[in-house]
Image (tube, rainbow, N blue to C red; front, side, top):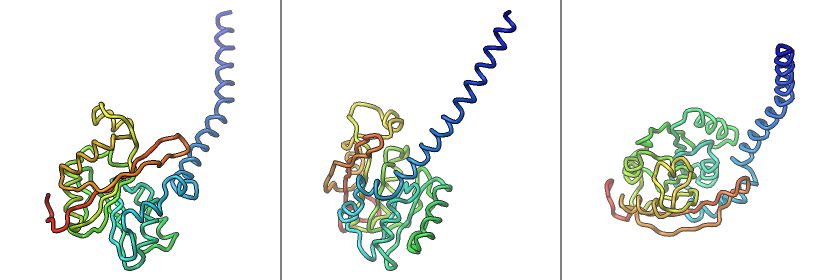
Length: 232
């Protein structure tokens, strides 16, 4: 009897697994579709308000901008469409696979002013004094070696250049490791970091809310002082 019971239990388990498999596959496909939808298109445009962001950063024809931690290049494409053939967009990331995606999408859209840059954890590999604008979308909290990154970005910006960051809102009182895991960081912590590295805080905006999960973001803008050199 124990043998029969075990066999029946095994059969039930197999049947349950077979029944669950299509549900799991459907969930994974839905998740992938949701991710693609969030990365581009009208839904993301509504909550990320790219035109307002580009206006706040002074992006125009001829601007040279770096999208640091660009991911699949949502903002890089927006930048490229506005800066045009007289401008330049450096799409930087530490992941080679997402840079492949950026190159593919840029070719699809006929955007020839995007250059991908394979950076490192502590160095975005951007030429000193080459940039009008630096931008980081939902990535600053990931920077473990943030001091070195900020030094390199300060050097890469021209005097008077702007640095815009969009990152997830959260409350103060936790460690950087906690915020790294939470994929969020308090605005004041980022403001303190950049001020310490020589940037001047200009303004802050809120009201960026991702509808898929309700995550809220802030948008902060800093400036490298006019007349500044490559180091603070």
